Length: 148
Image (cartoon, rainbow, N blue to C red; front, side, top):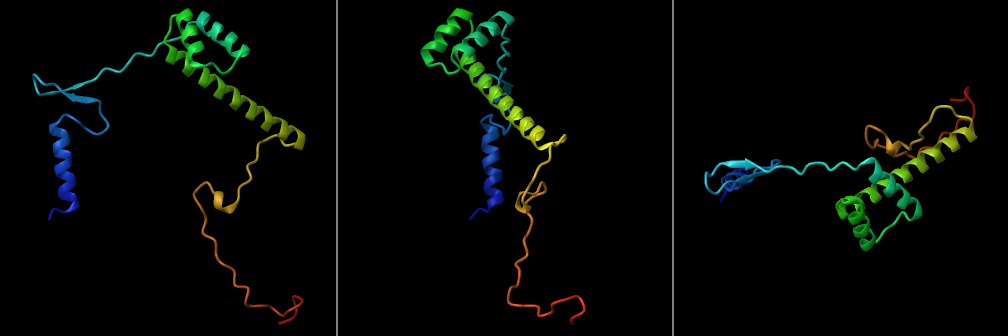
């Protein structure tokens, strides 16, 4: 029976033989049997005019259906996926701006100049802290600092 290590090694060799490598866009070329890198799509930049039209439509209606996206994409001569992504990202940006504005209003109302984060012990930046269970069976009978 194969060990886990041997099995993984065999699997990786089979993947490499087929031209598949983890983390890369490599494909086996059938003619030369050498891997070739697939080209990434170029980023399509939205012009100022297109952005202005998209922003105007967003102000009228922030949520479009598929047909409205296609018509707008045809009008602006860009892909409908690009229009849908622009609207999605614009809604996200607006949501973030509202949250920041709300946080600033809360800070100004409380008189704080610098933001302060309040966290529970379990929400530590370094990770959850270990809590020590308290022993409630022991009861101290002393009343004051002088009593022993």
